[in-house]
Amino acid sequence: MIARSRFRVPRSKFVYTVQRSSNMNLEHELGTRNPERGTSGSGFTLIELTVVLAVIVTLALILTPSITNFITDSRVARARNDTQTISAAIIQFYRDTGFFPQWSTANAGGPGLVANKVDLLVSAGNVPSVAAANLWTTGTTDLLEDQLLTNAPAYTTKTSSSAFGWNGPYLSGGIGADSWNNRYMVNVGVIDNTQGTLNAAGATKTAVWVISAGANGQIETSPTQTITTATAPTGDDLGVRIQ
Image (cartoon, rainbow, N blue to C red; front, side):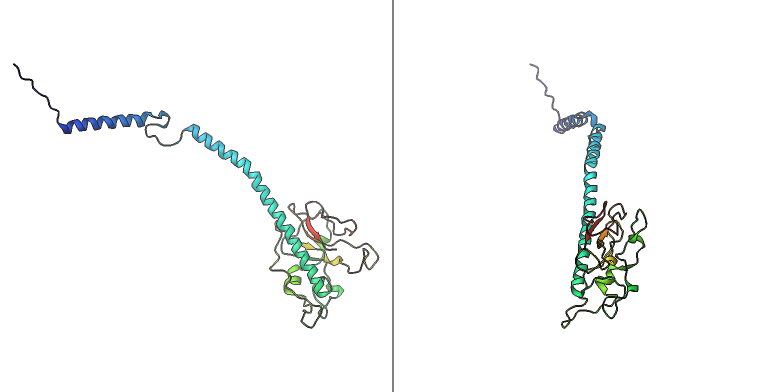
C-alpha cells in the first residue's frame, strides 16, 4: 500500500495570496466603477462642469435685475427721507424764530438786510444740471448747515425768557449730498409770509421746494412754479413743498 503524501501550503503564503487577490479586485472595482472619472475617481466631468456653469449663469441673470432695483429703490427712499427731514427742520426754525432762514447774515439777531438775502439754501454736493440756466444753478446760496446746525448768521437764540429765537440745532448731523452725489436745494428766497395765495406784490406765490435732482442728475422742476399749479416735482426730481 502506497502512502499518500500531503502537500501543505504555508499559512503565511496563503494569507498573502488572498490579500493580494482582494486588493487587485478592489483596485479593479475602483478603477472601473465609473470609467468617465478615470482610474483615480476624482474631479468633475465636462458635462458636470457645464451644468454647474449653466446654473450659475441662470441665477446671475435672475438676481442681477432684482439687486439693481433694490439699490435704486434704496437711493430714492433715502433722498425722499432727507428732503422730508430738511423740510421739517425749516418749519421748526420758522416756529421758533417767526421767520424763515433766508439770510446769510442776521440783522440785530433777526431777519437780515435785503443785500444779505439768498436765493437758495444748499447742502454739500455737485450742482445738478438744468436744461436751461435758471435760479437752481444761478441763484445766490448759503449752506443748510449754517442755518440749521451752527447758526452762522448769528440769529438771536431762544432763552427761557424769550418767546422767539434760534433754538437749534434742527438736524441731528451734517447734511451731505443726495444719493447721486448732488446737492439738496431749497429756493427759500421766494418764501412769502403773507396770508393767502398772493404775495406782497399781489402776484400768486411761487412754490418753495426742498428738492433733489434724482437719478438723472438734472433738475426738471421749475423754480418759478406757482403754488396753484405745483402739485409734485417734475420728472424724476424728489422733493417736499413747504410753500
